[in-house]
Image (cartoon, rainbow, N blue to C red; front, side, top):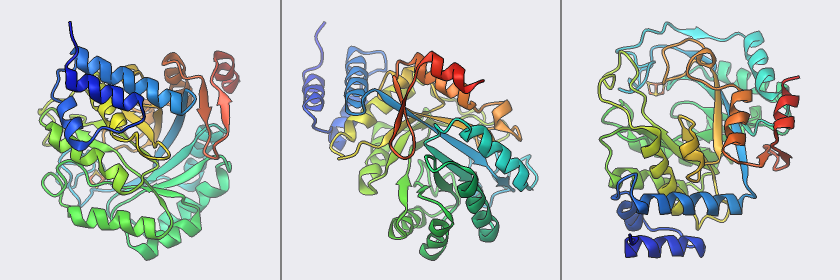
Length: 348
Ligand code: SF4
């Protein structure tokens, strides 16, 4: 069996530190997920990323702090106004602090996302940001996950304790959502101008997406110098228009994330690379970020995703340990060895 020559060249280039071009990424995604070529790319992505990061992974956490029927009406989301079963709700301060303490008690949470809807109450959100900044340790960065926002409001969020924003122009933006792709990009520019880091992902990936569509999104990470990215599959949330449109499996997702890794190799600081839903196939293909989740979640119909789809901190550490990572990085760049003794110690 001989590896496709062009793939062998792209992989050799990657080991030499050269990133795959957009055209090369499309070419790589043209091979079947169980092909020798796809396995060669997974192996290159995982070994190169692990070598550049000293075999280190990170844990992020997300708290969905409030929800309401969302006017963005994304076809894939459990909060979409047209189809949601959720009533408006908001976590009280005590519950938010309890959830922050749950994530942060061992000091190894790299970043905490605070998620709300496309339209949100700025004053409430600034209050939650301050609460999080006061209660989370200095080793944990606080990141926003909000709708389209102005430069001025991002400045206020920075002042309240945010270090970055999760924001993207998603697959199908403007077609399967009521949002304007240009407004999404403008929001990312606003955040950058306000001195906030960008965090992004290629999402939500479904079976119908072409290599060209996926690769176009992958390269936005370089445009915005994002500090974190990843690949996230679409969940067929019951009651949404995508409920019966199928899902890709973890194996396919792992091929996508491996190509994404090769695309990013020319970034001076490699972003942390997530895979969602978390899966070992992804962590053996270059991903190195796991997300623990609590509160409401757009991919879930449960009010508290930690009891349903979301992973907690202990489960997150165990997944990374089983995938062979030897260190966890905290939000200030310091590291802790990821051993079974460490994991068990966190539970005492
Ligand atoms: S994905 Fe976000 S913006 Fe879209 S409907 Fe859900 S909460 Fe609103």
